[in-house]
Length: 399
Ligand SMILES: NC(=O)c1ccc[n+]([C@@H]2O[C@H](COP(=O)([O-])OP(=O)(O)OC[C@H]3O[C@@H](n4cnc5c(N)ncnc54)[C@H](OP(=O)(O)O)[C@@H]3O)[C@@H](O)[C@H]2O)c1
Image (cartoon, rainbow, N blue to C red; front, side):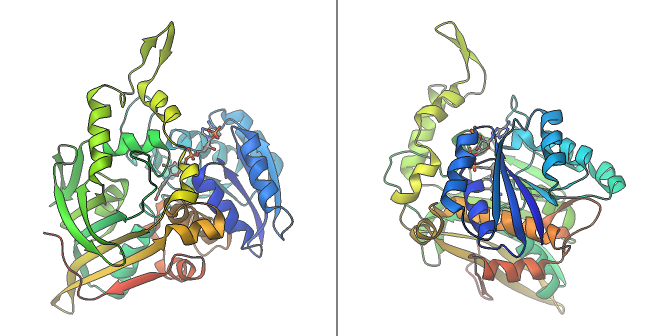
């Protein structure tokens, strides 16, 4: 079918590359390009010899001319951006310059401000439209599959969705007192920010971890979960007609929260530069350097994730509840691709998003979130590529 260029060689990229190589009919050739080329080469060494041809390159994705030149040289059908949210706009600029479709899994966030929102990327809509190119935003699990689940529920189960609760449960145990399951800097910025949810057309802001609920997750059990701000709230509030409230909850254990509070209290999660022995350092980046690398958690993590959406709304004039979710086993993921389930649940939909664009099933000039396309081919692909979904028509609700 064609060629994809994958930017980044971290936890999520590693899974996406494995999945592309399992799917050589679509991904005939891939280029893994990242800041540290040795990580790209290590991935190639692991996967070379199959039907998908793998190339590697060093690139600084923040250097738009350098990145544009590499895209022009490789001539991919799509660029799959699996670097960090800081790179999003630069990669979009390079895709426009080189005339190539764009896919990512996390919305843009300026490096010096802990604030993420879609406005910066949505502002590229005219440029992508005029260039006849597709930019697909947020094709991970959450955002990503949660948006596809919402579009599927809207298409097949409801006339009107009024309430969505997105529940992200990680029941995995890696044995460390404190570690993050994906990039620690991005993860800690996200969970230490104020919470918020969308209700009756406006944002309601909460203190970090102010709202706690307990939920009994299928195949995981009872867990504490906390309301967070999360990026798909913003796009779903815009794209799901009739919506009255959307909330996002993530599970955290007591040990994680105690460590996080302590690190915050001593200033280790700050992104303000400080002087240290004659150098400027950013405490959160230093903390990242001393924490376990998320990639190293794979062999140690046991248990399952359960991520999904509970919908409440109306069908044929009657009130209705519906729950769509996926359960993913950390050890099974590790056995298959050498990564734990958090990277797996992001890397699989990233590959599927790139496949949707490459095969033309999801291709429209402009900038789009996943819920703006037909969910059916993506839902089918989840079942084929390792993230089968389950449904319940009588779920327990969150108050
Ligand atoms: N939607 C979802 O469900 C979801 C869930 C989890 C994560 N994510 C997103 O997935 C993305 C990847 O996360 P991850 O855990 O895989 O992170 P990671 O392990 O830290 O990997 C990031 C990769 O990007 C590379 N990179 C960083 N800056 C770069 C630059 N300027 N130019 C080129 N490459 C650069 C890094 O290179 P080095 O190796 O040199 O550091 C690294 O290989 C993030 O945007 C994250 O927010 C989305």
